[in-house]
Image (cartoon, rainbow, N blue to C red; front, side):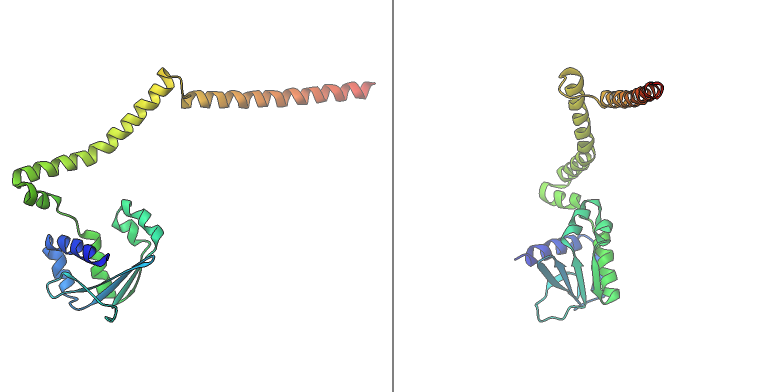
Length: 195
């Protein structure tokens, strides 16, 4: 069952943001269906703005179709994903769902503080935030250092400059050969013309 964990996660995020619950509470009783390839998730909005499970008998006010290929856009942000989504039904409800989906963020620090205590939670949050900014740069530097080692120290790889230089040398050789071939053809045609 996919619905209970997804609804629980959505409600956890909504619990952290009163503005999102107020926006959704304006659509109490409305039902949405999200279609992702072969999976359908149906939910309704409760009076307090939380998500509740809906049955197949409940008529959908909004249908949201997400093609499977669109999930590749998710790492680029919710706006990138929303560009691939097709929404049908009640425009006001769809707008509210879209707005909440784009702006709802996990308050990681609050959850870590609840688990570890306020000071340790804050430190863990800062460490995670720092790691998410440092690790990609660290990975790029490690890859660059490894490639420099393999090129200069190990002699396993050829540098980009050497490949470019080799390509230029091949082009010059090709041009020289073409000129030489034309010159030979001209000399042969002169030799054949005087004979």
